[in-house]
Amino acid sequence: MGFPSDIILPNNARYYTFLETKKRYNSNYDIVWSFQYKLPDRTSSDNLNFLSNDLYQLGFSTFLTTLSSPLSSLPGQYIGDQDPALLLSGGQITTEADISLVTEDNVFLTTDENVLSGLLMKVAFDSTGLYAASGRDGRTGAELKDVKRESLILRNYNNNVIYNESLSSISTSFSTLSTDTFRTLRFRYVNLGQKLFVDYHESDTTEFTALTTIDMGFRLNDYSNLNDIYCGFAFTTPVSSLNSTLTAQEFYLKNFHIEGYEGSTVLTETITSAEIPMNPISAVSTVSNITARNILPTTNT
Image (cartoon, rainbow, N blue to C red; front, side, top):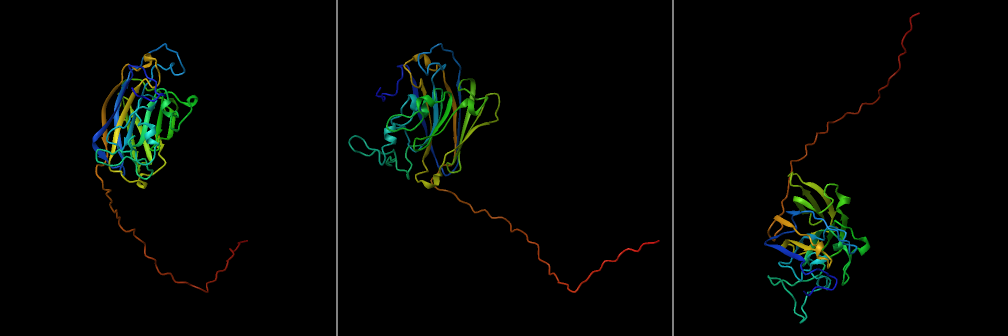
């Protein structure tokens, strides 16, 4: 299959990545997207290694990218990431024949810090927590002993982990990925990319509950090439194992929906308000030479 040596999956592993390429969004504006998923619980008596005492191994992620199609998308613990060697190469991405790679619109693929190209941000839900682990080619992250099962993990445009928390530590009602009914997840990428809000609701309600708020640590107005943002999704099961019994048997996904501003211009509007009324100052005359004296009350005897 041509995977790197650290991706260990059985022959019946399932994995895919897709992008919504019909619409491209301007990230100077808020981007909001949501989907529904269902992961019925299952039982397993396997206990073959340090990861096998989970009932299953599964990871799914959603992301924003400037690429109109995935490039070297890797399954397993990368949950659909591009090949880290490409992400960390710096400058223009080239082939072995030293030919620069371009997008469908003939835009060079680069990893220059001032021109975003490729992954903008990616948030993953991982039953093993391995998406947060460090990897080959200098990929930063946690050591294996520090990964958190049933976790929510976010990597930024530099592929650095900026959020890694177990679901049970951030929610009492959403403490595991398994759900026998459809759960809705909503992501709000707001304030020029400064924050990501993650919300959810169960099938028996339409009211969203805040799961977490993540500070992204930068502002997108410092970068160019921001009018062609695509939204995508990736899935893999198992995450890292030759044990096929850890594969999640059923995973359902539906109603992938995105909202945002389409266009290359940034619209501005000057907002004016009525003048603040001011009370006129009345003239005051100064009076001088005024004296006062105390008059003692008289006492009748």
